[in-house]
Length: 278
Length: 278
Image (cartoon, rainbow over all chains, first blue to last red; front, side, top):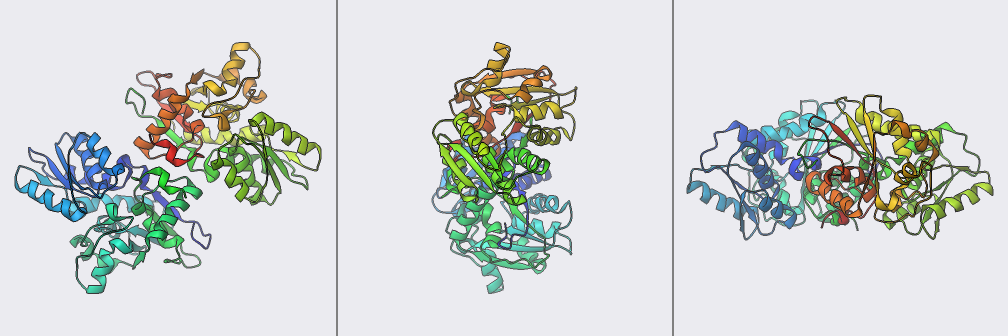
């Protein structure tokens, strides 16, 4: 799928329960911590909330999920249907995070952070560990929002595998932090906002930045082209955030070396499937 | 995904190149026969034609694909884009088959039959062989049109694995043949016609009928429900013919025993992905 025609290896996290890799971190977290009587609270653009609702139900915990109204119905409606308590707030992920913090302060609840908890990062890292299981990859491309999947990938990849982070122009918290030399707030928007729209990079991803082999930013229209390419070439439906890492290859933002073997995490599917043709 | 909640094992042939299992038979055929100067001719509801165009291009043969105008654009347009010669005729598969026979008679061409050639059946059988590779399945559900995938499944499944054929009411050539005691012509129509719309069962599938454990027929609306279920539960896009075998389970037409382990071939994806929500 690279413009060069070289084959790539894709990890189809779109096929996970709830349609994204987030179930990995959710199960890892809820099995790794004590969950109090009133259960777990998650703020989420949608995928993390879906995963926490799914994991909490399986493990018998009450769950309250806070999502921003800007998230697509493909993410909000399944949370409503999951049996979790759903709260919708105006704005993007940051507003949902604020409301979740308030809820945790007012009951016997624990916060399930979408990216900045060790148990979550450890869970997300298993996606990269599985991608690398068969050996033979030089480089892994990973989408970055708050950096949970990325921090997990950096932990899972040995010293011989390069990990390259990919963001969209509307969700470039890592790129902004690397430029500023510290974690800074960014304006969030664009096609991938519901998946990658953390206003500030997580501390765990920031702490791992020295192991990063690169940080790339792609345009929204390149992401949409990558979504269409995934459908037309492989009959895989990915949401914008799920196709962002691939977009680095299909746009030419990342050009592999002649013999470089590249793996890509295709990390989420929660979109209108009709949106991947055009 | 069965109503009982028992897990099933699905073989996602939707992820094959060209979006269906048909590339298996196409490669098996074009590698197994002599292809004359003017190349290969295929009549097809779309998936077989796509696969022959793909395989012929890879192997350096000219290809002429004849499709009925009733096939969906998701099948016809990629054939046009493949570099193969495309002929569109009125009607269903039977009309395309007639035109393909005429073309074979008028040049140095060979016919790539969609289901009734040994090399094709041998190729299709590898889908079932792979599904059974990990062991542990009692039963495999397979959609049946002309019966290539079914005949391959019957050849690949050992005596310990039951193979059950599933058709739609509009494409029930096997069921009609079993009822009549001989292969008879059926009227073709309904949602799965472009994939399963053979007017008469193939001779190879008919010859293998004694090894069949069952023949089921499902309604079109059950097929559409199975498509929606595949998307909502697993983020897999299947065309109607691709979801027909699963529909036997989700509709309750096939009820597994308490400990029966069931596998399903999800055999094609070539539809508008927006059609799997509703």
